[in-house]
Length: 235
Image (cartoon, rainbow, N blue to C red; front, side, top):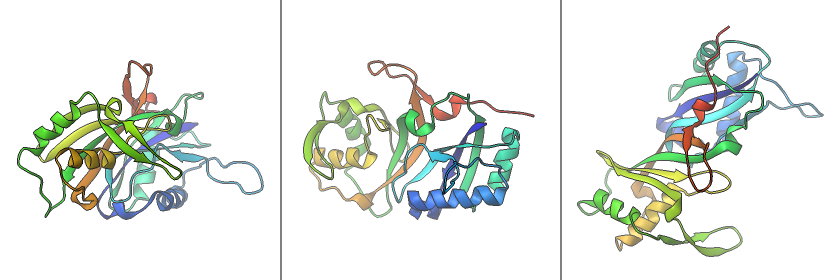
């Protein structure tokens, strides 16, 4: 049975990197007594995968992992067992059963919501949130995108799906995944340059709110939360 687990990563857990988070869940699954399936071969490993790595120093209310299990426990039984194996700043939000032929979350993810605020002690000019909306409403936003091998100019405007002002910061919905991916830090760096300021990475705090798959086309994006691709399961 394939299941999708949605979880929150809060507080000091933001300093735990992706590889350590994978090891953490591998051990937590064992402590929870989940009958997870293992790969075949000389060195069997748990069959699980994460939707998308979260940047170090970021918190989230919408992280996902997929795994295969051998038992047919109910969604709530699995959620409770996993939650009992979690540390205080990790919360298992839901467990959904996936169709047998469902794509895994890593292959499916196409977009993500973020809330971006300023850390205590850092400031931007008054009205910066409104200026951010002006920034996003440009027809083109060209940035210098760096990879391990090269640098090239890229128009990131098509990768910003939505933007709005919040009480303490701004909300953005960005392209995410293997095909198209835009990091919120790159958006903020470009925004700082738009304001004529030098970007200070430590000035901004990023919270991921949700991740989505696209059930539309490349031209007409129709995002659906990864949680919604599965359903609750009762014995």
